[in-house]
Length: 382
Image (cartoon, rainbow, N blue to C red; front, side, top):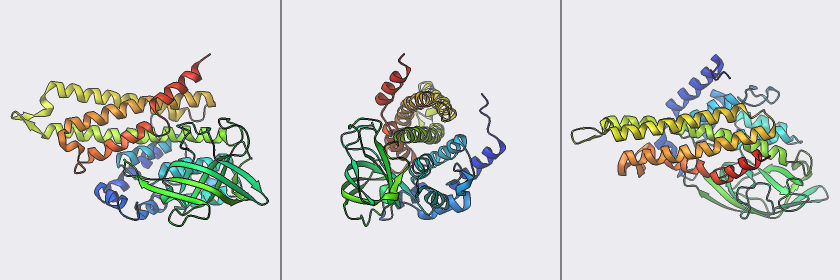
C-alpha cells in the first residue's frame, strides 16, 4: 500500500498549515472560547472562502471538491497541530456525513450551506443512560399530521451552542437498544433562542470546546425534517461515527506531533546541574518511547482512513483498533510531555497544557478504550 501523498494532497497540507500558522494564534483562540461568542467566526469563514476545506471532502454536486478520506486526514491533522476548536468534525465529518448518507429534502441545500461556511451542525445522539452506545435510544419521535413530535433527553451535544442546525436521533419503532427503528431529524437551531419544547444547558468542556445537554418535550418539527427513510438510519450513523473516529484520530496525531516537538525543544533548553536535561539518558529514553507511541498511532490512523470504504465489519475493526491505539498513545504522550515540562506543563502559560487537555478528551470521545476493545473483540469473534 502506497502512503505517499499526491502533489495535490501536499499542497492541501501546506495550504492549511500556512493559513493556521499565519491566522490561528493559540492565546487569541482561548480568549475567544472564554468570551460570550465562544469561537472565531472569521476563521471559520476563512476555512470556507480562502481555504475551501469545508467542502474539500464533499461531492462536487453540492459545490464541494470531491476529495476523500485522505484529504480529511490531512485537514484534521493540521487542525489538531494548531489545536483548532472550531467545529470541523461536528459539521463537516458528522453533519455533512449524515446528510450525504441519509439524504432527504433538507440535505442538499444544507450541504451547500456547509460548504459556504453559512451552516454548522451538532449531532444530538448520546443520552444520559446510553453510555457510548448510540443505538441505545429512549428519545422517541411520533408522527402527528404533517409534523414529528420528539420527546427525550440528549447529553454532551458538542458544538450545539455554535450550531445553526441540529441533527437528532430518535426512535420511531422497536425496543430501546434495537439497531432498527432509529430515525434522524434535522432542523434549524439557535441555542441562544431555543424553540418551544426545547430546554438547553450549555457549558465549556475541559478541552476548551462547548457542548450542551438538551431536553425535548413535545418538540415539533415539520415532516420534511426527516432524513432518509424512517427507521433505517443506523447504518448511516455507524458509518459516519467511524469516519469521525478516524478524523479525531488524525487530529490526535497532529496534537501529538506538536507536543513531542515542543517537549524535545524544551529538553534542549532547560538546564539542570549545568547541562540541558535532554542530555540525560533516562529522559532521552522517555522521549524515544513517546516517539514510538506516536508512530504506532500514525500507522493505526492510516489503516482506519484506508478502511473507511471497506465493508462495514472491516471498517469497524480498523476504526476501533485505531481508537484504542490512539487513546493509549494520547495518554502516554500527553502525560509524559507534562511531566517533562515540570510544574509549568500544567499551567495555561504553555501550549502543552492545552494540548494535554484535548488529548485527554479525545481518549474518551466516541467511545472509551474499553468500549472499543469490546467492539473489536465482538467483531473478530467467529
